[in-house]
Image 1 (cartoon, rainbow, N blue to C red):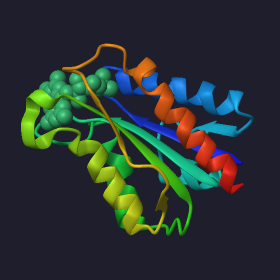
Image 2 (cartoon, rainbow, N blue to C red):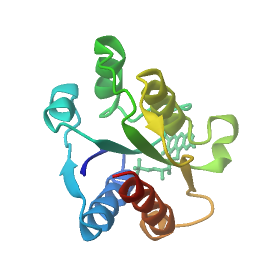
Image 3 (tube, rainbow, N blue to C red):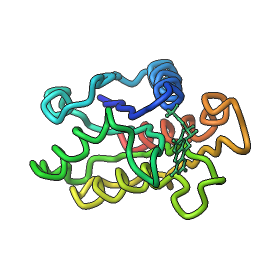
Image 4 (cartoon, protein in one colour):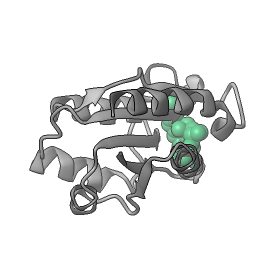
Amino acid sequence: MQVAILSGSVFGTADMVADEAVSVCSSAGLNVVRVKPATVDALLASQPESLLVCTSTTGMGELPDSFMPFYLELQSRFPLLTKIPFGVIALGDSAYGDTFCQGGELMRELLLELQAEEVLPMLRLDASESVTPEVDAQPWLEQWVNTLTQRA
Ligand SMILES: Cc1cc2nc3c(=O)[nH]c(=O)nc-3n(C[C@H](O)[C@H](O)[C@H](O)COP(=O)(O)O)c2cc1C
């Protein structure tokens, strides 16, 4: 199965989690395309059969500046991703209160609008709780991969 992995990051933490996802998925025998930088053309060209987005939140609940053009392009071109299984790993900090992991939530809502299918509830990684998000993501990633391989 072809998995497209994208990340949106300010300081590189979400990129690091996405790189961990690449190794977990590759080790499980999935065919990984790391879509970086993220553009809609690059995503569609990768002919994804599943999709993983890792993104942090910045500002007051916004997506990273480097990821925002991708989000806006996806929203305006609106390529349907009907029934494509997806997962989102959201990085944030609960100290930000109401906007905790809002960037991941924005991506998740857009992917649902595009008719993709969320196969595992979004993982929220809290910078107030842990400084090893790439390690903390591993059990979720393994579960996500299991879900995909069972469907294939
Ligand atoms: C200026 C700034 C604003 C932030 N705003 C939020 C926010 O609104 N909500 C949230 O959950 N986390 C927020 N964060 C926390 C980051 O999302 C978190 O530290 C994340 O791990 C950073 O990942 P990155 O290195 O991939 O950007 C903010 C961090 C900074 C520096």
